[in-house]
Structures are given as C-alpha cells and as structure tokens.
Length: 393
Ligand code: PMP
Image (cartoon, rainbow, N blue to C red; front, side, top):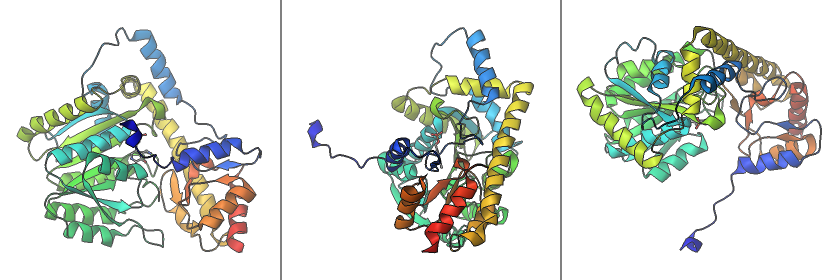
C-alpha cells in the first residue's frame, strides 16, 4: 500500500539550510530561514518569555487536558492588541488557541469549507504553505497578482478579483508584513478593500503572522480592523511565533467574527469539532507563557520593548539597503525602505542567486526572497557589494 506513494519534492529551504551549514566560509550569510535574528545573528528566547516560563515552572500545578479551545486566557489577552476596543464586532467575536498560525490558517480554511466555501482567492506570490493547506483541505485556489513590478501592491488586481468573485468564494489576505514580498496594502487600499468585500459579501480570511514587526502593533493591524468593522463576517488566523519568538512552541489563535451574536455558538462549535478531529487540543506551554506576559504589567512592558527593538533593527537594515539603491541598479532596493517585516523579494535571476551563493556565500531562497533580519551592521555592506557584483554583468 504505502509503496504507492510518490516521493515529494524536498523542501527547498531545508535543503538550503543544509548547504549553508556545510559551507566552511566564515563570512557566509544566511538570508533563507524565516526567523528573526539579532545583530549577532542569534534567535534568542525573549527575556519576557523566559521570565514567564520560569513563573509557569514554579506555579503550574497540573498539566491535565484543557479542551479544543486551549488556553482561553491567552486567547482573550491577545484580543485588545489585535482588535483594539473591538467596537463594531463586540458580541460577535470568539477565539480559540491553535498550534501556531499554521493551525489557525488550516482551521479557517476547513471551517470555510464546512460552511460551503468551494474556492479561495489567493494573491501570489504568497507563503508557500497557503497553497498547500488549501489543496490539502480540498478547496480550489484561484490566484491573483499581489505585487506590481515597482514594489507596490496591485490593489486593482485584488479589487477586480473581489468584484468578480462568486458568492461561495473566500479570499485569503495577509494582514501585514506580507510573506514573501514585504509589500502591504496602504491605509487607503484597505479602505477600498473593506468596502469591496462588504459590497460583495464574500468571506475574508485574514492571516496575521507578523504583528508588530512592520510599523507598530497598532499600525500593523489597522487594515484588518478596517475590514472587520465593514464586513458582516470574517475569520482571522494569528501567530505569536514571531512577535513572541516562540516558533517551535507553536503558538497561534483563531478568531471568528459572526454575522450575529446568536449565530456565533454554532460557528464556534464547528471550529471546536474540526480542531478535535485535527489536533484535539493545542500545545499549552507557549500560549500559557504569552498569557503570563500579557497578564503582568512589568512583563508586558518588557515584551513591548523587545518587540520595538526587533522592529527598529529591521527598519535600520531596510533603510541601509534602500540607501544603496544606486549600487545595485535594477533591484529597486529603494522600495525595501517602504516595505515591512522580515521579508523582501529581489528580482534576481536564478543565475544571479547561484552566483551569490557560490561566489559570495550568500544563501537565499530560489525565488529571490531574503530574510532582512539575516543582515546586520557587520554584513550588510558585504551583501550590497555582492549584489553590485552580480548585477554588474
Ligand atoms: N502565515 C504566514 C504568512 C506565515 O509566513 C507564517 C509563518 N511562516 C504562518 C502563517 C504560520 O506561522 P506559524 O509558525 O505560527 O505556524
């Protein structure tokens, strides 16, 4: 039976990690893996999380089962950061904990399918797992262009997609810090998107995986909030794995906004049933650590400072790259200063990407995606010089 399975293509990024590890050069640069790095190239545990974990170790008296909804204290503590004062959706909003943002995206798509959605519109390029999840859950993916060649969002393509959508369609949008392009919709765009979604009445699935890594905690979810107050119903997938540095602990949340408060319990019960059949219950530890941070004023302040530091560092790298626009013509580095989050896409050819790796020890995804946080004061000039070299020929 099992020998009927065809081998799947190996994950390209994992292969890149292996190649990087085997490269003996001291000045090699890893821009592949999508995790935040400090100026020293480390991905440390947040100090606020360490303190929260210590408190959990000291005080947690049971590891008995929770339920498919996970740690509701965590889910509720996250709400003000994501939804603000939640005016306009109060009484129609409920959430549950999920294994990472990935679990939340999967649950959103599965719930949409259970409700009758047959197709999901997806701007491309996107996080590769979006398409995989849609395929695996069993809905059709319909793509539209996310980015223009000039480094801005193709909002016209999105609005046209919404205008031509069918009643049983949903649309999957990145809330902020678009992966892989870093190209977000402007506030004005979000206003038009919200109106178009409300006019058409199709279901938005909003994926917020990099909250606080772009312009700020409030700014990064302003677009999501604009949509939520306009549309009758929506699903939101949220990840705490980047903004709390909890990657391997798999911390996410899934929020449902119903048309009416009376319709909410049925929606939540379906999400619970789907979670039960998938992972039964989410892993507890990371969510409990986030709850502990957010329920303590001192730890919250410390977390906000750590997040500010991350964001400021990435902005400095982006500004340095943007200032080098003239040194690598054709790559439109200037736009990196306008874009947000961990990622940017450089319009490099396959040959140039290979040359960067072989001649300069610079490792990036074959798509030209770079992790901006892989750069720091000690290697950014080297990276710019390498870009200048490969774009010269
Ligand atoms: N959505 C997007 C757009 C992402 O980039 C990611 C992480 N790479 C996720 C969701 C899922 O994040 P997590 O690691 O929390 O599952």
